Image (tube, rainbow, N blue to C red; front, side, top):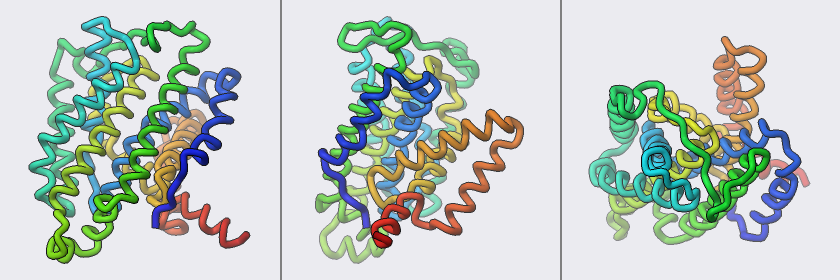
Length: 312
């Protein structure tokens, strides 16, 4: 059962971090921003998991969002961050809408592998494109916020605020979607798709819808990550990137729309600490963490909140 959130609760969670952001170290601002970008992708994957599906190719839309931002800002010299986010979401959504007609027909492993195939096609195209920097990619110039170019010491703070606003809007939308009749169909499709069809619910249209929504969320995540890093390259579409998104979603669980962001933040902390202390074996710690969560917390880290409530 997914816990619902209110605008008041969301504000109370975000306000302390936003107020403290000007005094946070640069590395922490960056880590939190990337966690929110990855969490947006995980939010879309959470919808798939509620319908009993797993997509191994969300890096496709993550990369499309990033490259849309990069191409517009680098080649067209347009750097307004809000417009860049909107255009990145639009590009990812249009592509997801087109591919969704095909993907919505498939289930189980075929759905996952077909989505992965499209992601790897994009990776191959970008890696062979010398005009886009091939495997090296290219840098993204600084962005503006409503025409204001933040000074160097406030760049990461302003990006964090933009990311928070974007995430907040997406959370409110997804929270409402889950509570709607269309959102409730996801669980019905997972449990018994044939019975859902007999009762008048269209599984294909519902899956197509969430595929587009997940694509838009991943595109927004890619745009935020591209702006925060200041560089994009084809590895954003590689299968290992999709694997990280699945890891994040499983780590957080699907008990709340906030769960993917918890998983993304914990993943970011583990990755940062493991890579800084053991750069050659950090994957071992990541894998051990996933095994630990699957064995002891099969519903993800968010399930700890329910256990704490029962203890109280």
